Length: 430
Ligand code: PLP
Image (cartoon, rainbow, N blue to C red):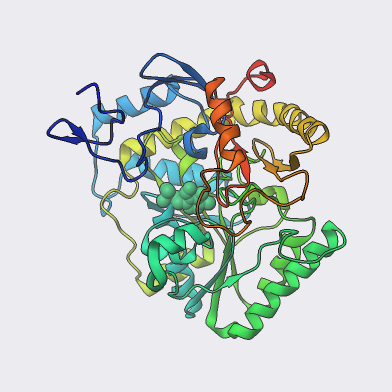
């Protein structure tokens, strides 16, 4: 590779680097190795990976139990048709049914979180015989045409264009203080849940198959719901015969202190979608875990969800080993350290005028910034694009210069923190 090619994904023509779509200025670092919660760039600099790359390497980097399981599977048989049975795929489905809450036990594999959400939407439409899946503004459910229409993040929707963004998914307001004029968190919960009921009534309850939500907002700003919001939503869903789907692509696999984020809200969804942390991102794998009756109905309808790489055996072997790691110690370890993370972040809010608030749960947090003079965010809260002058981006850059990686999320008013669950107390303190 030529020395002037700064990004491994760029390619080149006639010695000229081709700008990578995700990194047009060539400023992204090139990461080449990782161990535990640390990654190394191509110049040997170490970074504490406080964002688990993309909220996904929950077991940390280079975990031998996972890589050994993948190697062993590759030596046995690397690929088996998704139309045939496979022992490791079946075993992972059993593992997932065991850790899923309540009567969620029917597992459908796919490859990415976007496809898992599309599958969940299609399953909901099939079993409910209704076309609409409601989602909230300030949400992210994927970037493909179908999942992008579920996403309520303005920047993703503007990239997809108005056609994909309008098929069968209506939006409602998130339970954020910026969206309602509420006196207290409880009042916010009530107003935001009543608003969902209003949207269902006005869309026509018969036309609404499901509502799909992240239990704790992820890339839209690490925001947990105010107390009582999910309980009320569960009641509304039951009253109007609408399914509740939890998008656990980020919040699953210990990220928020339990196996799944929705468990921290004490409600049972009808379906869960998962991806990222299921294999600790050691191989692409995703899927849906649905209630038993939903699985039975899908079988009766004969709906075929198959994709070539869905439930790839090597990814399933990674998933089984990752779940063992979470179960044997990682979830407990992270649960024990979460209060350290929380209290250190709250110190920031108490001591820095520029920190408007910190919010999150478990090992998923955001530090939200605002101009101390005006109280306004540095970019408009509903802005789609990053502002180059945005001081929040400067905070992330300064952190990277000091060896710590954070996430941004959209709108770009915060830094996001989602460390691997194996991060040590000393690393968190640092
Ligand atoms: N759902 C949520 C909550 C996500 O954060 C993401 C990706 O970040 C997705 C779905 C889409 O997953 P994928 O990028 O694997 O398609």
